[in-house]
Image 1: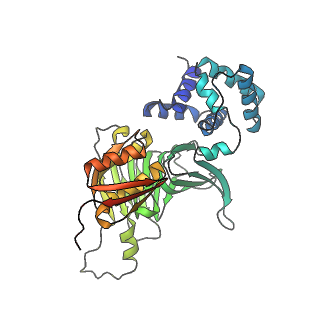
Image 2: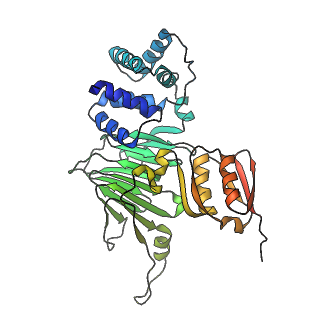
Image 3: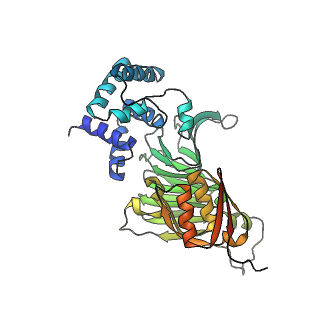
Length: 368
């Protein structure tokens, strides 16, 4: 298979959700070398879930949609024609017709992904912000060719040109980064009160504000983790198959007290060693990229936060006993009803779903 056919096959498999992690990495390596192809892929991906174009539409309908789409993105007519020809050769007419069915901004909204720019502060560069709503997951390519996958309820902000001595991005939520190596321009993820500095590597960062912690999991390469504004704290270096958990609650508490030398200080950093034989898709920390919600020993209160993001619902506990229940398992294709029925089979609680709100209460007697 020649390189041209290979990349379009990879793009089709990516859009249809069939691509393996190895195929995704290969596709992104190829896209990094072709700016126009990157732009075409981004357009296809953003409009993927927003179309209702019938699969039996005539060829001229496809051509018209493609022409409008490429005109709006300021691409040439020859680019549109070449793309149309390539997509037909894939024999995935239904897939690509779904992508090209809508060219209005509402498409971005229905996919749960928002792009917009804003001035962060006076004399500060304009930042591009990517917002992924609860119930959705998506990915984007940064100006340097680095790829970022974003989990539900996440916000990523970055400079549109990455000019300067460093490539800075700001994360609220969870993201997997595959960073292009630039030795003379480090890549820095600012997540809550933690900075993660890399040169070129693949790693996962989880930094939801309500979790009161930041987790960094390294897949390959090396990363340097530091606390913002703390010159006394030595950087922590992570190597492949290691996870670092930073307890932000303890950090905030520690700043409000004077700790005497004889008093044991709280543990702020905890380092875990992951199974080096496990594939990326089998790790709990990166399972979300493969459309799996994994949980190991989570209390119901902790699990509820994950379920709220995953299914875009609101979970309300009616007693503290239910919050303390513990669960192990995973969800992939289950509906929210199926998920709660599975949890109910493993623990003593009742629930009631009212639209997007779920009320949970324990079935065990509560002792005062």
